[in-house]
Length: 162
Image 1 (cartoon, helix red, strand yellow):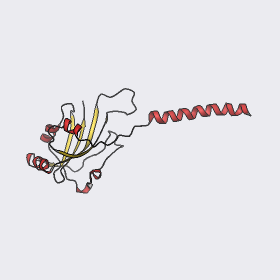
Image 2: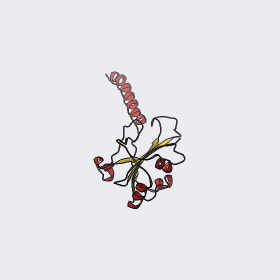
Image 3: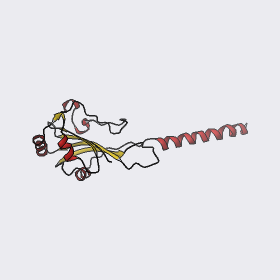
């Protein structure tokens, strides 16, 4: 009887150990929201006065890859001062945008809403302008999109390093 328990028990324990290891090794880390303004001021020197922000950062590609990615993405929302909002509103000829995709990761499994900043999605009025995009684009981020809500003073940015 003792021998049967050992014969069945040891492989069962090994299987449980493998399963637990696999769960921890292959589990994707949750990408945390950041609210510190200084990294965005450094990255977007032409943005002007930033009052508040929420953003995320991650590596391009699989989070489970053993080969580190040299490229990364950065996405988030910026609330501008009322003066900066007026300046951008008057400086560029804005085009309405019907939809902005807030997915944080390329596969879209993590998203954020403007509600995290106290806004309602139905109250957002997104616009874009290529000249503004070029002016805001950091030199190390060749894939960049910036959307501006001129009524709420909010910018959504989506950039990828190259």
